[in-house]
Amino acid sequence: MVVWTDFERATIQDVFSKIDAQSVGQQALSRCLVVYPWTQRYFGKFGNLYNAAAIAGNQMVAAHGLTVVRGLEKAAKNMDNIKATFTDLSKLHSEKLHVDPDNFKLLADCITIVISASMGASFTAEVQAALQKFLSVVISALGMQYH
Ligand code: HEM
Image 1 (tube, rainbow, N blue to C red):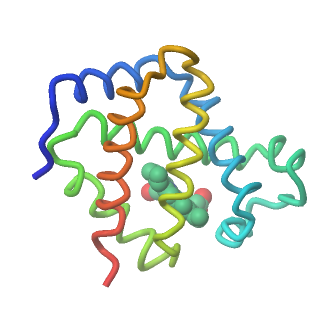
Image 2: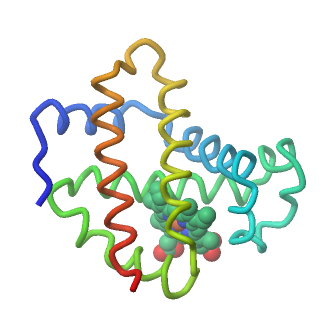
Image 3: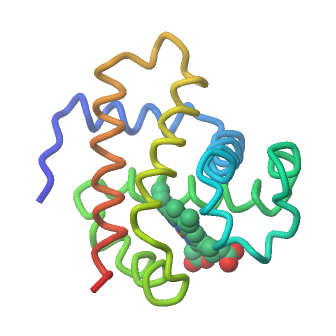
């Protein structure tokens, strides 16, 4: 089981209560699709992902970015049970979507960058450490159903 300090627990609750989920989700998923263009292959039904401007204006990217952040919020509300919380989501990404799990880390890094930019000076090294630990646990949970 993952051990969380009081600071880590408080920080994760604070971060997810403060961020604009819609904006962070859209920006993070857009960034991932631009910086790591091979991730576009999973989103064939999203239509035009031709360049950064098209990705930024794509409403399906925006909607899905929000879905991803909602998933993270669920993990933040279940910090002692992230693995069980994400069993079905892991199965979906593995068995149905066939997402290469290396990509989880790439999207997580984009989420970190976008949250950092949105929080400014309050995104201290300690806050970053707590967020990265949380995202590592999420990535590990998402990878559990890969065999
Ligand atoms: C769907 C979360 C990473 C590709 C989803 C859904 C959630 C989610 C909550 C919706 C599931 C449902 O409809 O029941 C996450 C989280 C991630 C992550 C928290 C990591 C931080 C990725 C990555 C990719 C990916 C890296 C591909 C590069 C997809 C696709 C769908 C999906 C293609 C289905 C979209 C659709 O059909 O509309 N994800 N995901 N996910 N995810 Fe992820």
